Image (cartoon, rainbow, N blue to C red; front, side, top):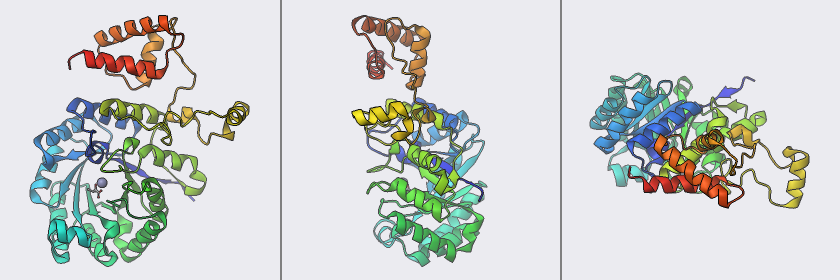
Length: 390
Ligand code: KIV
Ligand code: ZN
């Protein structure tokens, strides 16, 4: 059977940015978007234009800064939101309007204060309105996994008839489990044949730590697009982590029969860049990008790895772009090695003046300390950034 290529829809700049402590300024968003493009994500969700004029402007600037990725802009099922989303996408080479409305009884009663009939009507009208502006339309049924299946099928049918090209089935509150999600999506596809004509997307939150497992189950059920964030940042416990999904598909291609277009060698750098921008460190034992993901502490493990890495490593550090040539810097290291190390650690935006200053401090440190490790360099750069007014 031909391997299926799954689209990666990155929402680090929208859902990720919504998490406490993760807001980014314009320059940082552009830097992040360019790195996402370098990593080869298919779609970048750049923000929620109706949230603020600043958000709308940053979507415009992100749109100008990337060429090959589709840029998505989120909108509630309101004319005003859709107008702003379209305005935010005016410079995008490949624009996508992403319209959403909640479909669970809880959200319809307590948040939207709308009946089922009203939600179906708003879906049809607002997807058609968005379609009158843009060819590429994604529709999301917020809180899908706590919605009535027959109702959600009606909503999806309506959205597809009105022009949606991608249908998203989000697990908004991270409530479902892999088996349940698999059955839910399979049943929706059976009841809604029109889904075969569009991309089926999933968007899993991580409240029970099941975001990645649920996304993988969804791929088995027929999803062709996964929504995720770098380092798994996002509302509450976060979103499914991009790097974990991508590497799970790569490492278990034998049973999952699916892959992505992601350049996995950019994963480590992207993760570090986001941490540096947000100041939020990745937990050391985090899968794929944590500091300990490729370290071996116990004697038995070290012995095994020295004989054959595969004894305790299911993927190579090189495959995620981790520098394993152990380029530990010391007092004999020159500018070239130092600059390479900075780029590798995600510090590619330093001015010449900052570079000179950090290099000087590095030499001073190397005189006192035999080996200078990555964390020492992190500390030097962060100190430099704090000393220089932005
Ligand atoms: O979690 C969610 O349901 C969302 C939608 C807007 C897709 O973020
Ligand atoms: Zn979300």
